[in-house]
Length: 211
Image (cartoon, rainbow, N blue to C red; front, top):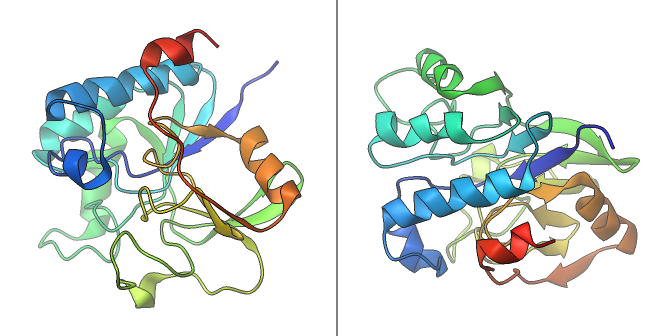
């Protein structure tokens, strides 16, 4: 078997409050950072490709972004609203200037949404934001969201709200027990048709390594 392609988003490395917000099973942010790195590297091979659909690191950004170097595979970032290299980010430093920091951290490419891709023969749109829905009660960033023209959408942003909502598939770690999801798994969901599917429960890393 050759290199595989994986998808993920919303790691929120360095973000203490995300543990409580999304029920992540970690005692503190250091344990969370280490657990996410371990789960990623138990899943992804060195020659694989991983698309990160935004919100990779928060907190003390120079420290947390440095963790990207420890993640296996060739990594491509499609920035989300918490990434300083996102064009909509309201920081004093322009997003274009921040991109160097993300490349130095270990990303091979940084892509601007929306992207069109093929997953298991299915054409999909790729974006950080869903067509509709949010991790909160109101739909934020309306001006940045993709237009729903009937295509399947791979996205992040909503954390643990769903894995699949109609033609929207959330690849975030809070929906997929802390690790990236493969092309094959996503293709199977698309082939099965629109549905509403909830998040997977987090599993111990030993369960992943035993597969």
